[in-house]
Image (tube, rainbow, N blue to C red; front, side, top):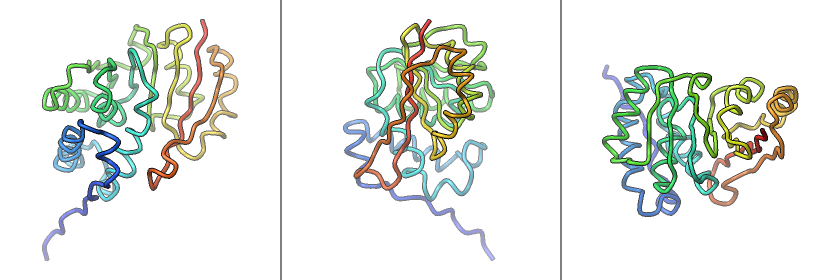
Length: 210
């Protein structure tokens, strides 16, 4: 009896249109995740059959929302930070990740992909000590926990853009005290990818006021 090879999702046709001339880099990153992601504890074995649909396209669909300087909190395997940095070379990205082995991976990928618009920082969000135009995160924690550690990193008038799941509305309700305390206003939820992706992306957006 031999071990079966993992099933890996074939790149959906829409990927090329979303990444444009950066699709080659996206394919390179996807191939690296397939080759090493599970081995290095970056993604689970069940993620390979939906790597593009659930993770890469879920991230890149939000690329038009970003500008200026962006901090990605808890970058992990590079979702969404590396995907967005591939798609938006005109934006300056800081990938914030506290775990050393993930930081090593992120630095390896930045070098391999030739991304000169990315800085990798090994730190917890609370220890970053910088301010950005936009702060983003994906699958890090619920809003009531995420807002207190990310809002202080946004400039006055800066934006929080979080890629969330279907429970985002309930998370907003549970985070009302944190939103008020950290002067987070103009809260909205956008659904991205309708008619384009098989799985849409729900995005929490808000402004941070000094």
